[in-house]
Image (tube, rainbow, N blue to C red):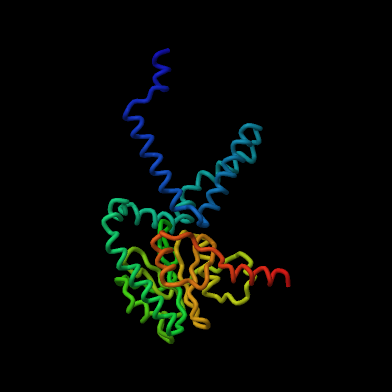
Length: 269
């Protein structure tokens, strides 16, 4: 009886193991959250539930088919989850402590992004800049040209100069490095009622829906700066507001009053 009750009294080694497993699961969920991989994971869970029901009800044919699927599922998972696995392995060494010591360097990066955005807006040069956060952007970096250059206002302004080879795509920033330029981002699948929003704005919304990136858009028609984050788009962003969003010191982007009124007007029409 005492040996059976020992399970209810875990030792320090058991607690350490539980903590490590919890951290690993948390990191995996951070990689998968708000990506297409999460939808695939839900499908796997449904298949597992169907398999359990087939065993419970003794449905031999369905159970045999699902067992065959699961037998080769590991190989299929490596292929399907290749971008997410690569991003997870790339970020294994990016600890919180390392990020803490990079805060001063990060402030210089933010200054460069804000300055570049002001320059582009004054010149009416269209631009879209995505800042990587917890969810990796490797999948989208592969659609553009690898740059691996230090973030600077001059570099960003040069990339988005009209008629330059990479000015039509998006710039992806990771840490203090420009990872890629000319990247193609997914367009939002949500119905956008505001017809004044162009392809850049729809791409910014699309990326913000699939990842936790902060996406900055400069309109070449209006010179207006917009920020997409978490599936929301805020327009008419000032340099001070942009700095607050990127540093996380201000509220999350949302529809401005003018945009909300315009959306409601279009909906009524």
